Structures are given as C-alpha cells and as structure tokens.
Image (cartoon, rainbow, N blue to C red; front, side, top):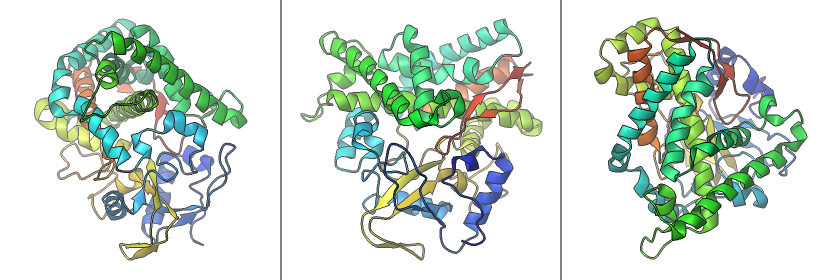
Length: 413
C-alpha cells in the first residue's frame, strides 16, 4: 500500500481529472493483492471496517457469479457504509437484497422488462426521441445537452411506463439528482451535513407519489406498469406498497440517471473521435449495436457496487474473510488491459466486448439493460441522422463516487 498515495473513500478523489482517475486505477490493477481502504466518515451511518477494492475484470466476474459468498443484502449494495434502517424504507430495493427475497421481487417485476415487452415500447421510444430532436432544432445551438436532450428520453419512457403524468417529470428529475448526487455541491444545497436528511426527504417524496398512484390503480387499473405491479399475483405473491415504492425509486433513479449519462458520454465520445463517428455514420444500422456497447463500456455509468463476504473464501489467489466488504469497481474492470485491447481507445467495431457496464453476470445483472440499449440506440441514431453536425463541449461532471455522471454539457450544431 505504500505505493498508493490516493484514497478512493475521499470524495475529493472523484473530483480529480479523468486522466488522474485512470492512472490511479491502473496502479491498483497492477497490485498483487486488491488494495484495502478505510471507509469515509458519514453523518448517517457508523464508520465501517473498510473494504477491498476489486478492480480487475476477473475479480468482478467471479464475485458477481457467487452471490452466496458476496452478499448484496447484508448492509446494502449501493453504498459502502451499511445502510441504516431508516434508509431501507426508501432505498431497500431488490438491488440491495439476496435470494430468496431478491428472486421473488425480480420474478414479479421482470415480466415488464423482457425483450418482448421492450419491443412493445419501441414506437414510443422512437416518437419521444423524434420530439426531443424537434425541440432541439427549434431551440438552436447553445443548449444544455444533458438536461434538454439526454435526460429527457429515459425519464419520459420510465414515467410513461409507470403511468406518471408529465406534470411530475421535473419533480422526479430533481429528486433523482438529489438521491444520486447528494455529495455534489450543486445538489447539496450548500450544507454537506444535511446529506442524509435530503436523501430521506427525496425518497419519502417519491414514495408518496407512487403509493398515491398505486392506490388509485388498485381500484382503477390501466395498461401501465403501476397497474400491473400493484395487481400482480404470481403464484400467490404480490408486492407490498413499500416494495412497490422501493422498486419505483430504483427504476426512476437508476433507469433514468444511468441511461442519461450513457447518452451524454456517447455524444462526448463521438465529438472527440470524429473518425469513429464517421465510421458509425457510414452504416448506422449495422454498427450502432456495437457502438452502444462500447459507449456503455467507457461510460460505465455506475462506478461500483458493494458486497459483504458471508464466509471465508479464496478467489483468484486472494483470501477474503467472513464479514469483510469488497467493492466491485465496474469502471476499472471495463478498462482492464488483460481483457480489452487498448482499453482507453473508443472503438465502435470492438468485438468481443465483455464489459460489465450493466453489472457482472449473475442475479443482479441490470434488469433494464434491454430498454437502456434501445434508448441509447434511438437517441443517438436520431441525432446523427437529423443533426449530423452536433457536437458537445467540456462536460460538467457529477461529484460522486457512485455514479459516473455528467450534469451539464453545452452542445453546438
């Protein structure tokens, strides 16, 4: 550890230039044993025992395939400190659970995210992207690509799926920013000591919104996902109101924020690599699927997930003790030179591309991956066809260790 002069637990690390982050993770991957870091002090949870930083692709795959050993439910997966009980009411979704409870919830909600079901939304996604580009052309250059383009499509599609009216779009957008960007000064309200209060308030407000809608849909069902979930009966199993609310928060926060950032990073990559952009534009239909996978690899919208070790276990030559924490840094694994040739290069023809941008293999692989791919594909294709000269400027990055986000980015055309 003497060679490691940075701290992944320090929020200031995640505000460093991207080149410094890349260099830091290169150094971590070169170590014989995963580095161990102390946890940061937070106001809403006791300081934990620290964690092993898993940064190699092979370690991410192995841990993901062994959920019995590397638990998501013992303290939560989306945070390094153990999740306090009051947080679980709003953020205790299936992503923070183990089987059999995780399997039960996923079985109920997964019917809405099969390729067959996503195909039914294709026309809606196409139409929404078309309207967004119409508005972009009407507004003219100089707009904020993130808020006026990239954020609008996933937010609208998820809200439409759930039956959330358009008047609530901005409300949901703002609350999701607070939940995932609580340590960013723009969303922190100037007082970092109130992070926990703001997170809980945002979670409570989203819970109230969906539970009110669900209560109405229980008696007045429509064809939306809220109606399906609140009235779902799979082998006698139903979602409780709290489970429905936690799933909704997961959906609007994770499904909205991550796809928004993939689209934003995609446009940034295409701006910075005109040769790859020209290659893609020369055969959009054939090359877009591979380009989307490469964009997700380099964007890695979710930097990490955390696991807790349930028993002593040796993995890839290293021993992990019961009760220890490991953090799976997907962003780092997606730049592992042992797996990806020239890993920092943007190559729309990269094949194979076994990235972990949607999480590693196993029960927690992203439920919305099919929908995310569709939205990224449609939005970028619409832009490249209708606004072929569009470029974006320097990104204003989200100050977060969890989400590799872009808050704002000017576009010109």
